Image (cartoon, rainbow, N blue to C red; front, top):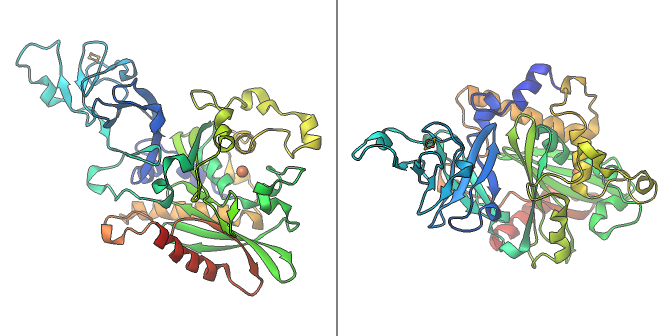
Length: 418
Ligand code: FES
Ligand SMILES: [Fe+2]
């Protein structure tokens, strides 16, 4: 439960809001690289942290992310011409490069200095792992780009499902940090090898949470025999990434996992990126087909307007919800709360410990920011940039063995591999 004021603080993300200021200190996903696949391809609209932007890839392949509205008189640059290393407004031909410099103002008289007096707002971009990341904060505070393990995997071993979640990012994040819902919302009545954890009878796992400099490590521990536990280790990574241990095991090790980004488009909408990868081999066709649940604009085909095409017969016999696909099930659970749920009316239990911790952590980060302290997880010194600790895992353990020991050993192994 949060007070109304705290809820308000955490869910407002536009420029000038406190949370918006915190998010603007991090590199965050802006779009998929495939949305602007080639040099000089059509630009696309990007709504991010309440701002309307346009992304384009110039003739040399460089990516620009500009304010959508032309600095001259406001025409949308989405309709612009992407040509010869710049985006040209269709109204009077002003042309911008990826840095927001005005290259030409062709309707002005020869010798006009107007173009040198105007700078169009532009955000720096980095392309990694099939995504384009941007930094929207003050230029003197740009942190080192975090090279998480999953961003270094070959592209054919990755699939990314992008979808619009029609509610606040915090509802999405609450869902990522909620291991207990797996036994209900995502339950299938037939056993499914990919969902090992759903087979276990202990449906109320014990949680152990370790605070880290970048967020948290969380172990969900289920007893599967008197002397044996099944442990799922997740992480919350600032500012809105949930690393979830899903996927098959190869030789007793988890073969990759999923990093879920809940990126606020604005206060009421979220771009959800499910970044799933395998360490060992390329994705299969079956894995990649999981993107079919959205249209070309990344909006879900099953959505709140058609009740997610819930099938009550399927709900009786096939799965718990009568709704197909994990992401649609998550969306139904989180969107049906309303765009911004009133958290002052919640009744949280032990199974919500992780959610409580994450909210506390975010509120503390806001307080720190207000007090002029550096937000968690940002790295400015390359000698301190070690992102290999950020990952997750699953394991069967004897009851007297701590998951922490195992995780430390694994972490070292993983760093060697990275
Ligand atoms: S409004 Fe864009 S060039 Fe005039
Ligand atoms: Fe879920």
